[in-house]
Length: 217
Image (cartoon, rainbow, N blue to C red; front, side):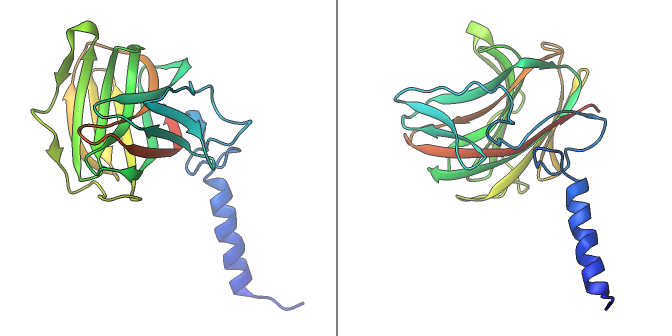
């Protein structure tokens, strides 16, 4: 029997990949601290709200959650309604597939309902926004305007890894493992999560999400 270090190395790489994913195939989703993970595998995915109309549709396509928008100045999101998180670290891979680079996509968290939540959003041309929806009262922004960040991978097809760390009153927001904003706020201390996409002047966008992981801090 011939011994090969090359085969041993290949086996160790495969073993490492298995160790870094849970049963749904999500990288980094193993460990006792993981509360929820989703690779959008049919039959194994969470209870996301999948709905739509003529202006926007949400669907699971090729094991990714895809939001397609066909109107301007709208926002569509898919909520995970049956799990509430207070202190958590949420990570997700997001990708603008089609549309204007000014289209936005990101995460809603500590949702009280469909009009009260925090929102962390980026655009395909490298901007980000952090804000709170205050019900019928409108929005509270934690940055003065859409702000440029070199951490954001720009362009169609570029994958951005978003992370939200919500620890009590302190919320830290990362893009591709780089901190882009941190805030202190007491309005919402727990709630559900959602994935969202939005348009502005241009009426078309398509965004894909994958590899959602929520863990205890």
